[in-house]
Image 1 (cartoon, helix red, strand yellow):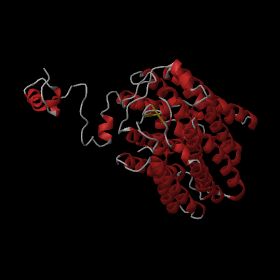
Image 2 (cartoon, helix red, strand yellow; image 1 turned 180 degrees about the horizontal axis):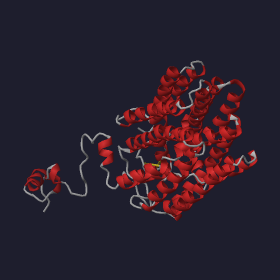
Image 3 (cartoon, one colour; image 1 turned 180 degrees about the vertical axis):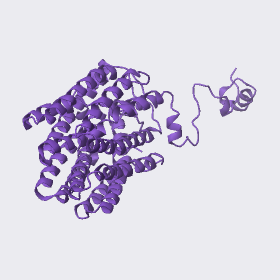
Length: 462
């Protein structure tokens, strides 16, 4: 017999099994409540990520030699040929070769695993560097140096992108190609990797310069090849945290050719080309400047100061929980970098270049960190390492162009002319980046932005 509304209400009140009457803290365990205030990102929390140290330490050892490669080539070839232009061009051939081959290496690592690519790669690199050293010290023809520079660059191990791919998995990602859950530590991890990169560039140029000046002009490259071999093997044998090979997913997500098919990756590649001109222009111009004043030992110190500014900025940037969109932060940081490069063209004293190097370094780190954070949101996990490698390759290619241009300008007009290269490179890249800023908005797939950071609508990534 149907009950009236008042009777139905009383019956409901007497029914303790009614799930609607339960208080919120008795909800089903499959529906956890979200904390009102999620924990803030920080380096302490990041470094407590399970399994992180298994790849961080060997990864640092394996990427250290890369900071010694360009300056080692410039110092050796300039010693044997007497020309900054030739030295810069040989170093540029190495950088261009790396830029073209790095994405291919990243794609192979995505498909077949990091170890399968890294172990043969470090052996080829060590052998190629040994060949370049032998040709240089025997005063071989310039064409032979260029020919050997190609395999040197092509075999540079892409440890940085591999470490970044491991971070993406460690912070909640899926190693089988499925989208990973959002993590507030992604920007912190990108900052930590930028700091690690720059710490190697604090140590690398100083070490290479000291070896070349105090032992033998070839000592810097010999040390680079030995460290690459040792560090690469150590990193490759640490399988913990490495993304699993996912050939099917990688082939599916790369059906348009490569990660460069993503328009946002192309825009960021242009930005990273400009960053490469800063690195290359500074290296050659500072080397020429210290030679001109008769104090070549200051070269590594001045470049180390530039890298130290970058490292300090990265430390601070990663410790902040940023509220603004990553695209806006990227454009602002890039504009600041262009402004910071302008005084390099007119102020040429040791204190001035040291101070300007710090300022330029402070602007580089936020740009690099934000760019890598955006890439993780723009691409699927199955082509993540390749996407990171495109940015690394863009830096190398920009550095190659800058080393060549700065070397030619320095040979003809002196070191002050070489310092115009960073300003020109960042200025042109900024114009392109502003025009392509609409490409830096992740497009969601089923409520999850491509590559992992979740968004309900296509807005700038935080």
